[in-house]
Amino acid sequence: MKAIVLAGGEGTRLRPLTCTTPKQLLPIAEVPMLERVLSRLALHGVDEAILSLGYRPDAFLAAYPGGVAAGVRLSYAVEPEPLDTAGAVRFAADAAGVQETFVVVNGDVLTDVDISGLVAFHRRHGAAATIHLTAVDDPSRFGVVPADSEGRVISFIEKPPPGEAPTNLINAGTYVLEPGVLERIARGRRASIERETFPALVAEGVLYAQASDVYWLDTGTPEAYLRANLDLLDGTRGSLPAPGARSLAEQVWVLGAPDLQGEVGPCTLVGDRAQTAAGSTVRRSVVGARCSVEASAVVDGSVLLAGARVGAGARVVGSIIGHGASVGGDCELEPLTVVGDQEIVHPRTHLAGGRVPAEVTE
Image: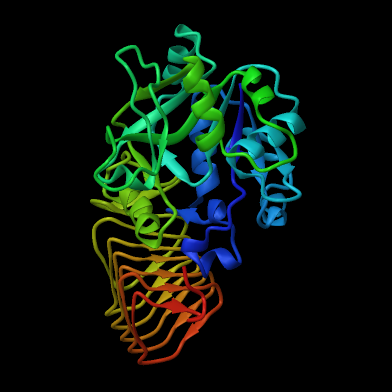
């Protein structure tokens, strides 16, 4: 089976990290997000994925020069201009010659949805399109999808005003589509699957939906990105946070050969050749490959991407430090500070919810 993975967005809410690395290539517990998405697809029989790209397509080509990731063959559809969700699906499907039932997923959504079960539901109901639904506390930020007892969608309401949604079940971003749906999407122009394609299918009674309470997370904000990492460390998503991880103590994991001289507390993953100095403390965090945590430093509830450094006496709490970035001695970084790749935070700096460089905002 083929899948289209939507991965064209700029990831503005995760800047400055995404100024250099597309969101889908950011690591989740030392594994690129895209590979976690593809691994889930592979479990359900997807053997070819078409990456729908717009922002920094070169980064994806460089990351997977052999055209394979997580055991899935890759092809690329690079939009000449932003085409929105439906336009991107049509463009990618045309590029790959899709002619059979296929799956569409968002490359920045992590979920344990049973794709095989969703496909079976889709075929059993003779649907033109089927949407996976999940329940959320605040549906006003999503497409809300009320359905009847058979799963036929009654209406598709994109981002209703707060308090006015008829249900808390929302479009979770995994679709099963018949190739005939593509003919409803005009070539070469922007088109929204949520605002155009799905409402048209509702009117014909051929859009279905299936809800589940499995794990689901849109990783598009610093808070959600941190949660995605920590959910793999505290057992929320299973017992092994990353392929090849070894357990040193309860909920303390390592990859490769790190040098651990400091205290490493539960719900922590330390990558290959990372170093934690005597007197340092790391807990509820990912310390990426080749990172350095110096004496008396504290890293708590944070993610340090590969090669990052935390200076002596610094405190990094609920924050994300980019590849090769350096946090100076005696700094205080409080939630939800984000430091970009290769950036330097000067000693004794205090940031709360800041961005480095500072001019990069959401």
